Length: 353
Image 1 (tube, rainbow, N blue to C red):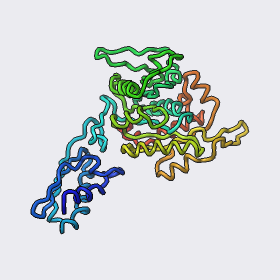
Image 2: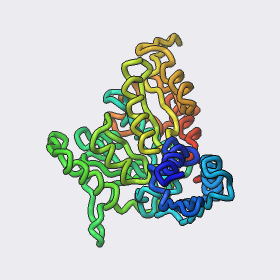
Image 3: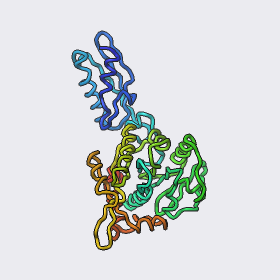
Image 4: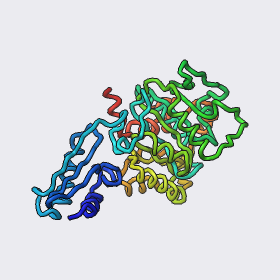
C-alpha cells in the first residue's frame, strides 16, 4: 500500500452524478501511509449532504481491501460551501457565478445553420411567459443576430455608475450583444484572446440585476468562446440544438462531448426544422425523420421539443417579433417553445421561488 497505489484507486471514484473522478477534480488534498494506516484528506464544496457521504463510502470500498480492512483507512472529508451559487464540481474547480443571476443555461450546437439563435430567442420568451425574469446574452460575436430578432437593432446600451453595461430590454427580456455596439454592416475582426475577453466582459461586466435565468446563445462549434464560458462560468446546464439529419447530429455530438469533459449537464435536445407541414396537413421531413428524438433517447436526456419549419417563424424573426410571443393555443410553433420551456429540468425550482 503506497501513496501512488492509493491515488490510483481513488482516481476510479467518480464525483456523484458526473463522469469525472475526484482526483482530477482536485478534491484529494492529502494522502499518507504510516504504520500500515492510510490517511486521506478530501475537501468537497457542496451544500448537498449526500455528496460527501457517497464519496466517503466509495473511498472505503476502493481502499479497504487494499489496506487489509476498514480499520486501516482513515478518511477525513472537509465540507465547504461552494463559491457563489455553483453547487457542482464546477464550483470546486473555481468557476464563477454571476451576481444576481440564479441559474445560467447555454444554448449550443456543434455547427451553424441549425437555428440556434432562433431557438435561444424564442426559448427566452417562453421562459419569460412562465413568470421568470430572463436575460439573453448573445455570445456569437461574429454573427450577432439577437438585436434584430428582438426588434432592437440600432439601440445602444448605456453604462451605470460602476461602468457596467446596462442591458437593452425588449419583449420583457434583458439583452446584450455585440450587435448593439456595432452597426449592421460592421464586421467583428478579433482574434481568439480578444474574443474571449469580449465574452467575459459581457458576462461579468453587465448590470444584469436580478434574473431567474440567463440564457447564453453560444456560437457554433467548440472553439475559444465556448471553452472560455464553460471553464469560467458556473453553468447549470446546456441545451443542444440540432436538425434531424445525421450530418448535423455528428457535430451536435461534438458539442455534447465538450460539455461532458467539463462536467456541464445536458438538460435536453431541441430538434429544429423537424418537418414542413403543408396547408393540407401533410408533413414533409426535409432533413430526415426524428434524428433528434433518437439521439435524445441514446443520451438518455429529454427531447424538449420538435420545432417545424414554418414561414411565420422566419417572418416574425425578421420583424423583431419572435413567434413565441404568440399564444400557444393559437400557434403550434409557440406551443412547441412553451413545451420546451416547461420541460427544462431547472425551471420548476424557479416557479417555487
